Length: 129
Image (cartoon, rainbow, N blue to C red):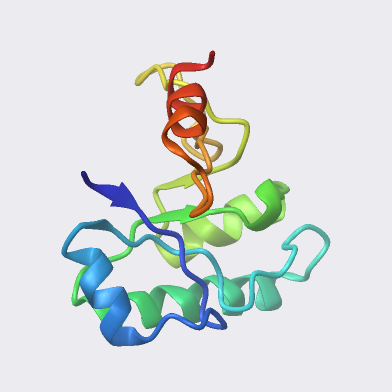
């Protein structure tokens, strides 16, 4: 089973572990410190995003083009900053099945799966029941 892993720079996961995750799925950006981007100035937002992109690219050897907004928080400035950093799409929360083509590329729904989710919880999350 493949997955998408959103890891910030302050996570206890090591670069070697991030590389291993990238062999099983994708590792997009999730910001440097998992800070709330809303209300930050452009330079602070850019640093949060760019430092994490560089960390992920260094750890995985793969380009980073997507981002998950920490706490699903974003404003127009954060969207513009992410685009300036090279992000082409970003994930929010409140996930359900995505309809490709009918999405806001800066707020793609995502379903958060946690390590403590059992199979019934996982099934309920991905099916919506």
